[in-house]
Length: 321
Image 1 (cartoon, rainbow, N blue to C red):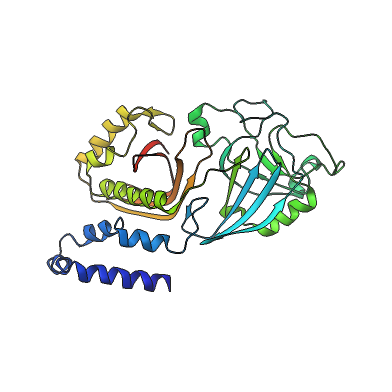
Image 2 (image 1 turned 30 degrees about the horizontal axis):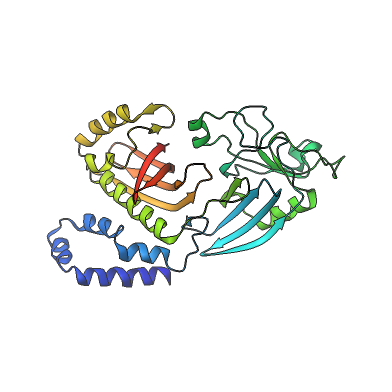
């Protein structure tokens, strides 16, 4: 039904822009005009119709796990257009020291947005971690950008020989064992987002998500059609880093050489996620999607991650993998 609605919407767009049919008949500009449609108001409104974007925009149904460190609770939400609280876990344990994690051994639980990398079951764990555990991807790309260090931040259980322990962790999130087993039944860890903050998560609204989606598709358009100046205008010249290796000046130099070749590209984005990021700086978002990129000689398929600032209704990319 969703695709039928989109086709009807797109057909109405074509009727309002009949010159496209001439282009199609003559074999020119058709694909380009379809790509332009992706950042039209009509298409963006279609994407956002009936969606709850309080915790961000997600193309696909998602489990959102939220840890509030001050209250020591974990909320689990289902997001399938509407945001639904499934369960609240109380009496959790976090790092013994307050504040955001910055250094190995500081005893703090990080603040940020993370993925659950895999699930460790009972037979693969020390009794200390309870019946199962989910290692996270801390430090993520943004953590490394900020200079944070450390590793081994997990969601796990309580020690089997001391299931009523009261002391805190070295930085992990520990959930009572029976509750942790309940959590495992509620989520698909491969399609779950973990958001950790002190007491109040950053939220967003449809107007901001609309701006970001339009800007994202405009950035894609400039990339696909080798419009270098427009493409580079989406980047934060002062603060940009590419995978924490090199800065804007070298990045722009390399892109200029690539764009000059005017290669024809196939470029698709799937499973887009736009998440407001817990940070002292407002309007920072993590954007991720599955990218399919192909030229005559090169191809890539995998996750693409951008960290952006929303400034004056424009996105500025300051970090990219």
